[in-house]
Image 1: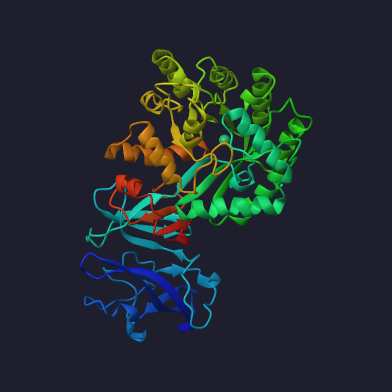
Image 2: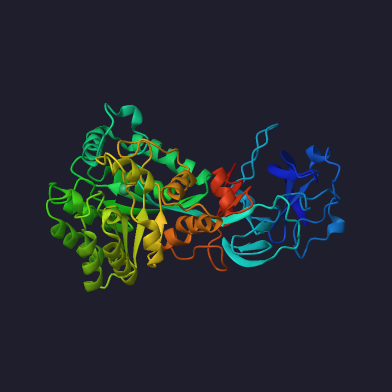
Length: 503
Ligand SMILES: [Zn+2]
């Protein structure tokens, strides 16, 4: 019943039994079952023979038609010293044949179990079973070996990112010293953007993000008199291109304002018709805050889409457009469908008043997305002493029950001449700036990168739970705190049960 034996290669981490991990390449053969087209993987793992704890391996899959006695008695990739055992493989039809003599990693294969991983909300190790791209069961692990067990986290969610204006440092004639300059410098650079140029830089961001465990991105895509719909069309095409690796959630974003531009109001509407997922806004960069907010709230209601606004990016306690957002959210019954990026003015407001505003945000189920790299870079610049850190009051918001996420915003451009696509760098900066240094705080920060961020952008079918999409990453770390300290790429990243990135 086994046919079509095909050699493939799999990069694996093996534990020699003395606490060391070694990366090696195993030559595997994939055998298709002629009855059901399932695929089994079999390997002699020749490069592992130097380990003295080689165990007899057993059958790879629990296929009812598979009689192990009738199979070649080869070692099969299932034993305790394999750190993960992606051996039950379905739907390998897309595996490219490796070139002769060259191994390549087993990518884009659908796995149906990941064994013996450490889950953040679980005391022991768990096995995660996957059925057709969704988590079908999470059970205590059959293997109890905790040494070197990988940490599993849901795929990270970068809930606020600008793809088309990333990586502009080498084009900047000068560095921006405030928000107005950042907007002006970037606006000038946009004149030279092309579709190919946007794609190159956006792919670089997404590939880096994915390799660091990000499986979902909300991107704010700029629409204005200069770009027209160029960036929107390009990023919507990119959304299709990356659909099996990173889920893109696209916001129609009027960075240059709406009513100070000739075409932007119409282009916003056209973007929603083209398939944008959310309406963006930036009231602090338009001629009138109320006019701007009325427009974006109406557009969101008309297209039945959520709102995600850049708001109150300053250290001026008198700039509180957030109050008008709260009022409209309640009046228009948009509770749970509004997210706010930056909101840094609130950090300069007297604490009692800030607490009252935070309570109103929580009551209106408005999410706040803190963007610490940009906010710390741009704010507090006029402070000659006791310089403010420039962030929204993260601890206070959390204490009042606000859903707070943390995100990247910009990478290497006038707004933020920093970043390399590792969102854990951003999280680490947040931890430092907000005094979030304990193990419990590290767990909170990971929630701000996962469940809180997912809620902020309206994801459903998300998380390490039965029924959710099997989007997760495996880290060579002992805890959330350890992962945050290391800030290293996860060993593997899975999207709907499919391996999409490896360290
Ligand atoms: Zn932004």
